[in-house]
Length: 244
Image 1 (cartoon, rainbow, N blue to C red):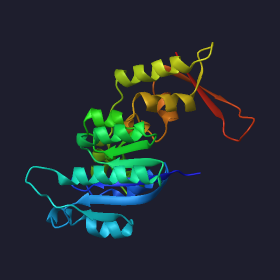
Image 2 (cartoon, rainbow, N blue to C red):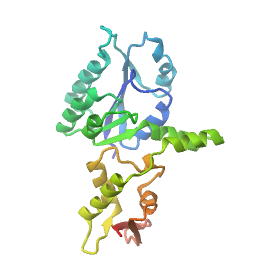
Image 3 (cartoon, rainbow, N blue to C red):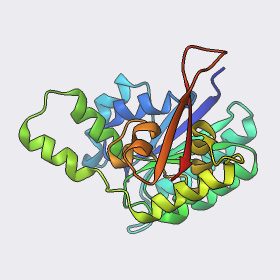
Image 4 (cartoon, rainbow, N blue to C red):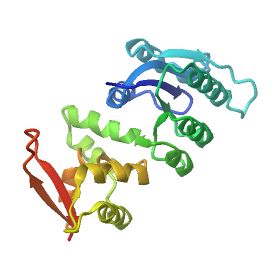
């Protein structure tokens, strides 16, 4: 059963180009029953959002910029989030922003037992990322959009430029996680490895490195060994991994 999610979008801080892909991504984690976007809609910079809001049933919340240099949108989002929290209508929140000002909000919502998903650009400060249960880079959605369209050589190059190369830091994280879960023979169930990786590093996502799933990412790294086992309860094989 899907959990109900409140989706709160910082319109001043997030590009509008990938809103459709973003909403499709959010739907994987729950049912977005509340969808709101905050900004000063008298500002011409937000005009690109207007048609997209109708297409995706997102409610715009008007927030005037009372003082130059101060972000009133953040305050409006935080107040609404707390109102929604106490309404008991949702079990999780999706905060769409690259702004570290929402770090304390994400922490407070998790303290209240909410599942918190963050979505933002790769420039998002680490404190906000680690305050979420899961953090998704919006650049991943750009890659998926390019893959699903007919690509020219130029945008193929652009897609490669958007993919990170996995570093020794991430490889060590995967290796230590496998060790944490391994049986006496060193094997760990890959599903459990993925869950623990997410808890250790909320922005860990195989798509950041050009792989749609964790299994092909693991297979691409020579440090790890994969074993596919028969599943008596289903038609899909169980995948186990261990350090070489």
